[in-house]
Image (cartoon, one colour):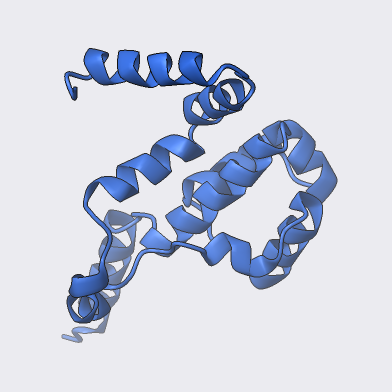
Length: 151
């Protein structure tokens, strides 16, 4: 009896069970979302410009579907950024991380960057920079710190 069918079955079950998004795909997708939101563009509008449905844009942004080279180039054109933009601050593989631990950023930096990429983070920052009164800005920062029990 051949082991080939069992090997194929094992590979197929592994594929189905490991449908987790790659960290780089997630990162690139989050950069697409960040830039799209920064421009105030909807997923539907971006999809129209690329000849895609908004559902496909959603899958790209979540990292569920990988973005091919030509599509990434098109995204860069539509979003007005160089292709390298999508790889900025990309996660470092663990093997390389050990070598760079001494210069690694603090553990909070990732959550801060993620917040700044979120809808709330973008809206908060846009509104905050429009406040002309520096004392009012300082009072807002102090208020947020006190609400976070970080004073």
